[in-house]
Length: 360
Ligand code: SAH
Ligand code: SF4
Image 1 (cartoon, protein in one colour):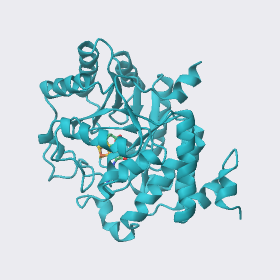
Image 2 (image 1 turned 90 degrees about the vertical axis):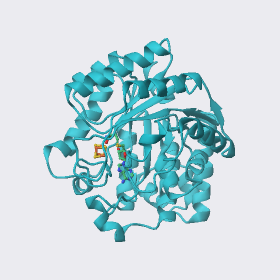
Image 3 (image 1 turned 180 degrees about the vertical axis):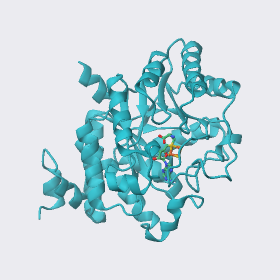
Image 4 (image 1 turned 135 degrees about the vertical axis):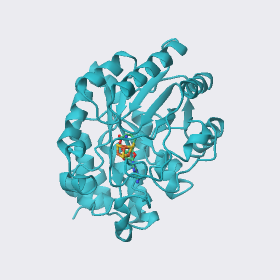
């Protein structure tokens, strides 16, 4: 078998190579992180772009088996931000020169929801003279809705494939049309067709997931030619059906290392995409997000949702920052970027270079 050093010197990595790298011990893992950091410095620079995260609503029509705000979790107190809350968040992003926001929400497809999101997009553009960049993460929608939102100002969209292995996908979702693997793929393809910078990602450390699955996830993202990625560890939530498999989970430290390896390997195989250092990493370890920046990630998402709502948007347990306000989240992330040796870029969209280059 090739050594990790030899594999890292190859131009192209096979599934077998990725499996060896994902299984690498601590010393070899350090080589992987180092290689990813070099590639990031060359193709992206040691820079971090910010996306102010707005958790619009925890109302959701779906029942994903892993998610704390799934429809059937009756102990969640449901909320939708008011127009004034959303505008305050936009104002914060503009005043603090964050450059972009991410509007994320439970998945709803009513006309009222579609129109609401559309009106917020127009508002964000109006308030910022068109300057605020906007990523959406509002689940599967029709191509018509995606086009409508694009026309209103959204230019990036994040929709995770969650698990590229169809069987694993089916195991972590209810078995019905609302949670259908092919429907997910169609939605991802629609996003590309509509001209969005398209992002996807997976959860790492799911019950039943193998190292081979994770290697396939990386190849899926490469072959789908994504522009951005947001992936993070699976973090259990007690009020979900998937929590009955908690005894199968890898220990926290292992899940963290595996996530960092996934980020580093994705950077190695997709050199110029945007990769987020996700909040779930910090649920596992205080330093999780800065380690991800050192391992190849270049995007962080300070939460700018008003503090009173944060504990209600609990996708998983131990969500960090629920007692913070927008100002604290931003300051903490600035410190975090500094500790990871990265320069924070203000007042810029920080679009995916991969997307930009694919258009020229
Ligand atoms: N409803 C939208 C956006 C909100 S959910 C959607 O599903 O796309 C955003 C992401 O949270 C999901 O893609 C999923 O990967 C992640 N998530 C949900 N439950 C999680 C858990 N228990 N652990 C880690 N990530 C989780
Ligand atoms: Fe809803 Fe998204 Fe959670 Fe699934 S992952 S239940 S779609 S919020």
